[in-house]
Length: 137
Ligand code: NI
Image (tube, rainbow, N blue to C red):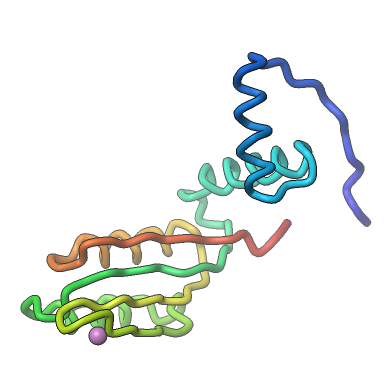
């Protein structure tokens, strides 16, 4: 059964609302309601990072120098420690030194954060970002 929709009012500065309208129209939102719903979902998701019961799916994006000592091997060892969470890995050779890797993941939010943090902390990883979506609405 679909959730019943509830209406509520929001007060804010006119200039802030104008900026918001401009940003969301650039993002392709047809109206404020859907944009605000997405912001609220994102806020709840971020809040649930530490919740061991929230099951999510997403990806970890890593940019790194594969010449760094043992880096690739250490990345593999860590991923093998998270067998139940790593679904697949795609590797792109960016240039002679640098690689981009996308790891598809699924599991409890806290566990995925732990995996992402361990990979990002490795020497030679210049950029890392975990992006997830909730598996329930
Ligand atoms: Ni490569």
